[in-house]
Image (tube, rainbow, N blue to C red; front, side, top):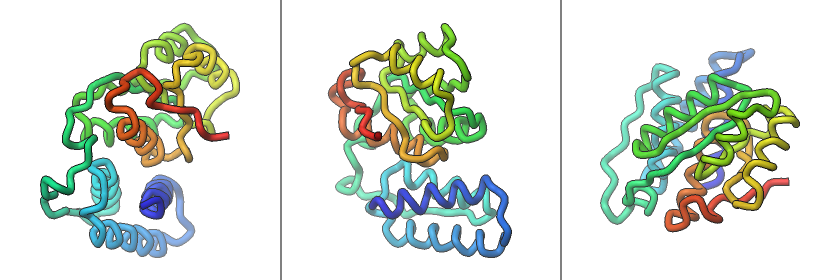
Length: 193
């Protein structure tokens, strides 16, 4: 389902950016929504929320059939608690990611930061978060090195694959799926170069 993650990231980015052809943008969004509905049983709660948000933004409300108990993922079946920090310089993207996460995982605490230099607040957030997701394509070097030093070798720092709301939220979801029993432990790895 990596293709759907890519499509959701592109759709989110296209919707929040200007488009030379609004009609082409709507056709792409419609195709992504159709694909998501076709494979809805295989989508995570977060992926369904991203599709619903994109549809609502575009004026194309999306509804999914109820998910059968056997199709519910571990991250959906177990209430997930903890503190997630998201760093990006794009405040609108950060807020969209926060809202997506809270709709899918209401027990999470999601903090946002966009400091351009190493501040006390950024250091404290990095130390206190169970997971820290960093949008490295929309960040400053000073913030990256500050966060990296603050988290040390805890394993809770990970970089999102892209800088859109869908990628930030999906980075959190992947870490939740990998490490539900290791909250604050080695659940989140800095695996991207």
